[in-house]
Length: 138
Image (cartoon, rainbow, N blue to C red; front, side, top):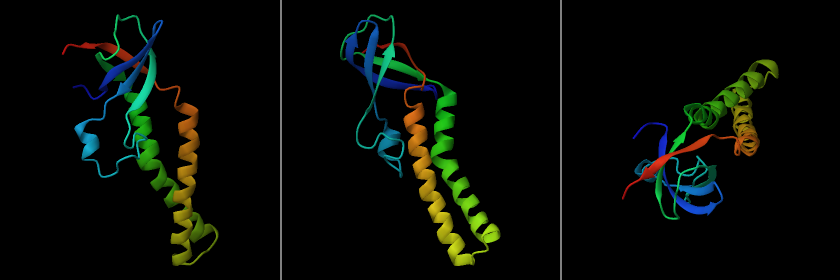
């Protein structure tokens, strides 16, 4: 399986738009940070335009752009650490807090990054590029 491909089940068909449910993989089950990707204990559904002749219940292979996966990974894993570090630097060197208060201030940076991530998610959730590559034969 290609890095940018996932498996999904067709849940609903309206004209040339198909609602698919992306399947959680075995990697999701063993992930130490379950749910941080937004999936939690549920599968993620997306509506995709396609010309393929599909039926409800069909398994399909979906391509998710690599740039979307990289951007999402950066926002979820790297961005909070950067914001936390920046808050620490500001606390320590700009506001001249002692070490303990600088660390506490950096934790507020981590919380602040969570708020920013929430708004980024709301802004870009409809802009992620999905494409149905084809049906998977059972």
